[in-house]
Length: 178
Image 1 (cartoon, rainbow, N blue to C red):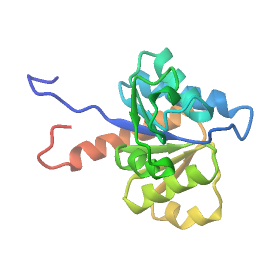
Image 2: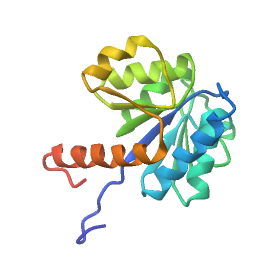
Image 3: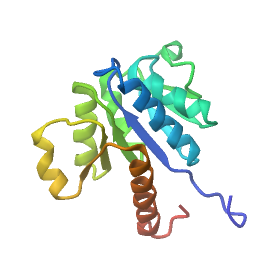
Image 4: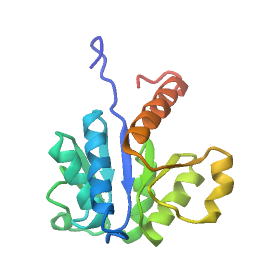
């Protein structure tokens, strides 16, 4: 709340594989979740108790953050224990569009087809897509040149970059209070 006016918090979508591509990915996902919480942003992910979803939510919760999980199934029991707000959808992987559209910025860590689909949807809907320690292939290079996708490998660089982009988003929303 600022001056008696409720200010909406930013939602950072953290996407990535349900299985780790590299042994280091768990640590990186945890660091991303921790950074999101430390900045007072809300972490949104696929909500499951596996891979990047579990590690990023754990990082956020260990640092006092709020987490939202968009589950592909109609059973909240599938949610990671680190998810505060499980959203059950029953729509399978189609839930990826909810992940993207509900996020102010998308951070993608290594993953496979589901993660690639979320990156593609972020581009389609003009969301900022940041690939953190993830080279998803040459198909993204033209989008990088157009400044629609960004590749970052260090957590502090990621933090600084997101702060700048969120400031830009805040100033571009005419009539909004965030």
